[in-house]
Length: 112
Image (cartoon, rainbow, N blue to C red; front, side):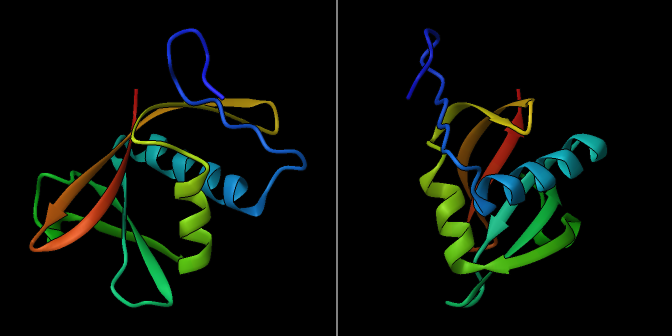
């Protein structure tokens, strides 16, 4: 679903593990004042980093690893561009984009 501004407002009931996980990492991103960068280095897992996607991979700070299936759900529940989600009463506004970091594809969640 989208709101009047066109932002994605995906709401699932009951609250999914994917949305709770995304919200937790978005909180880390906000605390660090950096983007959340998701990269898949293996077929089974996705690694999450905080930092500037325009920089080098060495400049990114690893903050976690999730199952690839969970990362896929996080992507399925969001869209490229502006997003707005509510998780446990807290509203998150972010922009999802794509980047290439040293030859590897990355999904970037940036606060707006």
